[in-house]
Length: 175
Image (cartoon, rainbow, N blue to C red; front, side):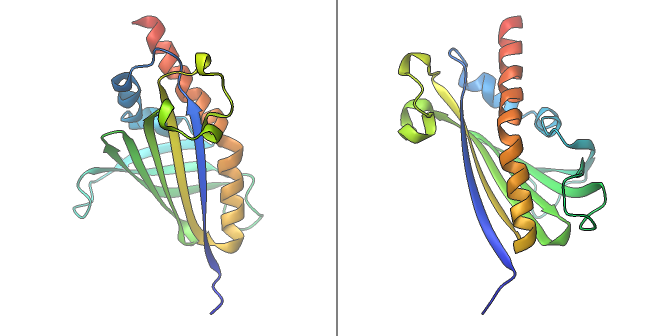
């Protein structure tokens, strides 16, 4: 049977700076305000009441500017619910957006030495930090929408990760 819905997966790895400590990076991942504000399309957000079915998650209503979506699909902004759950090695971020879009993203801190060679991108061992930020994204939506959302994720992830690393470096310099 033909389905108009599909799923796509993305995998992104960013090497963290030498000297980054696990707890320091984890505290940044558990800072939901920081994570939400890393989004280059963020208009604003607000905290929502906890969901009794998922008491470990913090809930947010996030509004993004979405000027690149196909005309008429959404307004120039889109509001969606985001549940962020802290984990032992990062976060799980679940988004439920209009038109049936469901996106699950994990950001985890992994030892760089455990990653595959293609994940570290040929970076010389002498330049690698001990930790890496690993982002895995699963997007489920209508076939027409998945391509647009995937494109936005691919367009933005490097900048988002770079801003996260910048926060790590900025605090490391101060302390």
